[in-house]
Amino acid sequence: MGQFAEDTRRIHKLLSDVLKPTPLQHSQYLSDLHQADIWLKREDLTPVRSYKVRGAYTFIREALEADPDRSLFVCSSAGNHAQGFAFACRHFNKRGVVFMPLTTPQQKIQKTRSFGAPLVDIKLLGDGFDAANKAAMEYCEAENGLMVPPFDHPTIILGQATVGKEILEQSPEGYSWDRLILPVGGGGLAAGITQYFAQTGEKTEFTLVEPDMAPSLHESLLVGERIRLDRVDNFVDGAAVAQIGQENFKQLSKFSPEQVVLAPTDGVCATMIDMLNIEGVVLEPAGALAIDALNRLPVEQVRGKKIVCVISGGNFDFERLPEVKERALKFAGLKKYYVIQLPQRPGALKDFLSLLGPEDDIARFEYLKKSARNFGSVLLGIETKRPENFQLLHESFDRSDVRWEDITYNEAIANFVI
Image 1 (cartoon, rainbow, N blue to C red):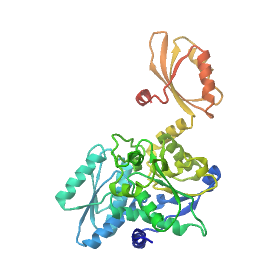
Image 2: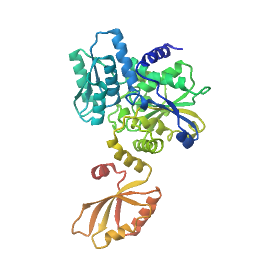
Image 3: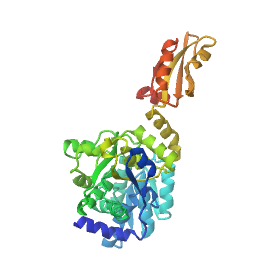
Image 4: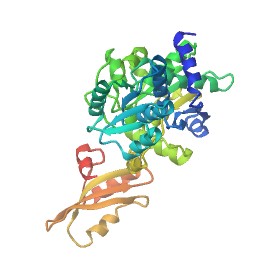
């Protein structure tokens, strides 16, 4: 067994002071759905509802062992790292300061405050992570604090690697896992687990999953070096990172781009709704990545295999639920938006309604422009029970005198009117 694995075991023993092992649960629903043996590592069930507490606790503990008199810790985060950091500061009775963007949802601010009170202060600065991070680093230098990074540090990686140790310890007797599916943002979790498995001699295959609109690892693997993305979509906020960590990429660079699944945002939303409705499991977008990857992998890599999906977190703000549901319906082909032009005459609306099928439901109807001209423009949202119903609806439109345009995936128009 290598030194990294030995260090991971040491760290895991220290973690037991504050963190019980999270469950490794068999999912009958996912197993039946994919004709496989699917298990879930439930990191959403830690005290702070994500694995991030492992790395933050480990980092602060190691820092205090080196310098017991250290009194101030600082971090920048808009999510799970902030909560894990606050939890650790309170445990060690040390002052902490968290820098968050002004755009951070109140739910995350309140949870961070509750985990760290009364020792952790929250400072809101800037419109995004980069501005908050810059302010945190300047504050840290001015106040002689210690910055606690979210992922790019060997000690953080060690803390996250304890998830892998628990998976092996909790595996049913005689089990040898065919595949582990791991979400990737900054790369701390994946770097830790894959290295631990390698040093313990496990032959498990790995699938790494990133949001398709924040593929920092995938793009770096394509060119063979770390690159910074010019733009990321922050919807999957727990994994929306513009550049994979330097320490993390040292470990993950051995993987090929083909081993990285890019999960579409709307598909992730569909997975979140599916798990909530059927399994009663609340997932944040990043927490759904590993489960969603089951739908993207070739069938031969899933069917009949023993697979663990790591659920990285469940800190979901339910104010986002309407948008998640909306995206899920669109991904499933069950909801579309149109701009239609109805003739300005009595009975035109009644005639239009007769075009709808028995499973079609109007979810939105709004006049965009109404005048004395021959036609009036309407924004129309329609939900249905089966995707093929839209083809029948389009055929009905074409046979009528309705002028129509499908704007469901026209981003410029849809973002303006929907």
